[in-house]
View 1 (cartoon, rainbow, N blue to C red):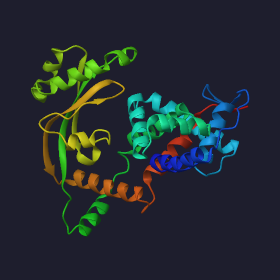
View 2 (view 1 turned 120 degrees about the vertical axis):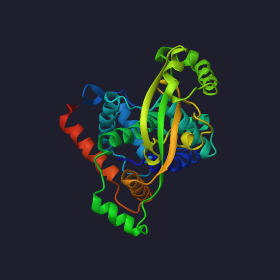
View 3 (view 1 turned 60 degrees about the horizontal axis):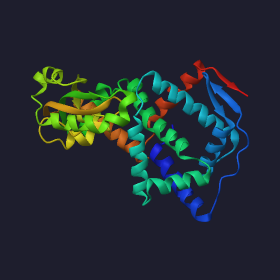
View 4 (view 1 turned 135 degrees about the vertical axis):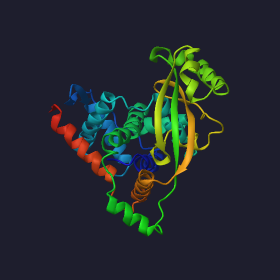
Length: 314
């Protein structure tokens, strides 16, 4: 699996150089279908954009490599849609804006780089969306299976002076101010205001569903017990920074959401120890200190999708 942060960072270095040196995209010929993945067409125009993307990364940029990357992304995108775990367009736009700002560029300047290099904003944002969504699907599929054995737990605790690590246990509810897709542009601001106003009046988790019933198109979902390492990255900072019994709001693909913190306490049981140790292993793999099981699971998952897929090359 491509590491999104590394791939995007590497992309920027080449893209900025392309802009400074005046590198322009070659003229594109009439687009034709090069592959069909479960009914989704990949055109020669798509392949050309991916080749431009690869060139900016200073990596192999032949048509076959570009085409196979796009086939993999099509399979991932289809699976993300099937299990309904896609990040929202707002999340993608926010990531693009943060990426631009972090490199002292406005989104408009970044768009100029992308267009001039022959990649295009839509192609790049599509890449970002897959990179953000796919790990969620992989974690949902394999996260609970990569358990540490009792022997592993004892061994790790021996390394930790025979002490089980401590983490925070949360009981959470998800409060969703639903926004129909067709009305996102028109009412998102209004719904965000309503969600923010409701936080100060939130009566607690026991009365949450009664409270939601007094408002229009508001739903409550019980998330149950979550340990700190299990909280999704999008929510983790909001939970940790929460003051009172609710987090700040987020705009998601469902609408405007916040989490209600029903209770929290410090725990050090076997499950907590396992979660802490697994998070430590994940942090090490991200730092390049160990082989990443997430990458292995991603490859396994993608191989399964390829075997079941109908892929036709033209």
